Length: 157
Image (cartoon, rainbow, N blue to C red; front, side):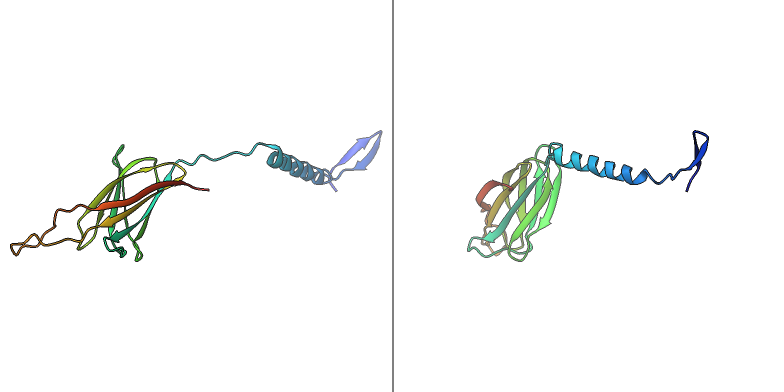
């Protein structure tokens, strides 16, 4: 029991915790109303993802290919390495046009341009050409550039 209150000349016991239960119920009701009656707030997605697969001209995956994606607007770059199945992904890219460069031992470097859209997954499957000898006993690249076999943009669900 807490302090005593005077009422018409009498002392009445006062419990300071008596109203705390009521206050909790009111808070729970208010919170519930806010959660269920307030309009749903949608967070804005401000980044996109670039995925794809690196393969040779025979269709075999090229593991450990090194990829660099450069945002042509601001020059930001990201790098990754292809997995054993040739797949790769760049996550959390700002929207824009990216120059994607791919290098792998024994293959001619390849480059393509891909547009990344906020909240979407862009795809670039890249086919790389094997290096060949130029003749004369010196090794070197044939000058054949890599080719992008497909590029598509799909929305996330």
